[in-house]
Length: 470
Image (cartoon, rainbow, N blue to C red; front, side):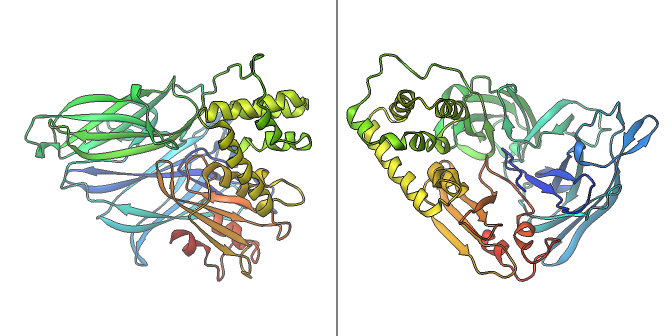
């Protein structure tokens, strides 16, 4: 089962092949903050998918019950834990909405592991189990910034809400995908120990960087002047109305009067903002050399091979032309695509890509799909060849799998993809999980691999998690 999430947070999902009950789904994220007199603490934020929960009738409405258990360990020793019963909001008129939960733990700096178990008490399904590594940094001593918290809703608070922080009620937004309909990103974070500066004021610099080209969106660069204090809360709304489709990094940096950068924090997000435009021109003259490289019987093949490197609007155009089977339109589109993408070396860029398409077809294609239409082929064409590949085809406890590691993708470092072959035949590997923004996130991927030997997904003897975390 795939969960396509355009974000970096983790999806928890239960798998039950035999139960007729709804299968619980929830999103998990964590943010670190600091409170004077209390210390470094971490927030675990959970968003429950309302439609995935089993409800019972109550007072002309619906209500669900969940059991939540959190255990934080270090070197196999339990450092903190909490277990509680969580009632869903009262649902009226059969309108089922997502809802949120939040738990805070004060932790000393160091590395920990969170073990989370969720149980729908109105379901016969097995509990949902997951683990997450935690790194607590010491924010108490130097000038620093907390994690960036993006808000679904942010408003002044009185301290009575579970989501209250530094004068505001911050309902977290865990999704990092922003469709065209969403034009603003409300961001909240805290600056610590700015009183260590000699000046009574300091500045925060806001930048937005295209993650794949590593280029700064200059018009979105902003500076904010703030007064020094032990804790300075920062809440602003970032206008992304004109931000085109792509992957971006929103970055905030503390700067002193001499423009020296002291500390920074980033938030990665995906933007879809398709702008309609006329891709075709009657004046286009087909380049004979360019067109000679595309035989008549391969026009549709090479047209669709552009999908892995195209934005959603371009993909719609490709599929529309492909369905029409209009040879001239297909030839025009391929040439125009590369003229737009590489205006200075159009033909050379196309020929390099053509060689890559042929390579992924050779290595990743199968009897059902061309190489560029497979998950491995798409990732290879979109991000280039991986730095390292770890392959395990002979495990008796796990499905065959490959782990691809990239030292760098655009502005991102050390990103990984894990593919597996649940059918055991036909070289048909599927993308199971990746920590790259915009790709599939599946926290339960080790259990999915282990289903080869265990229906429940318990792992026996597999080492895929260790290989992925290397």
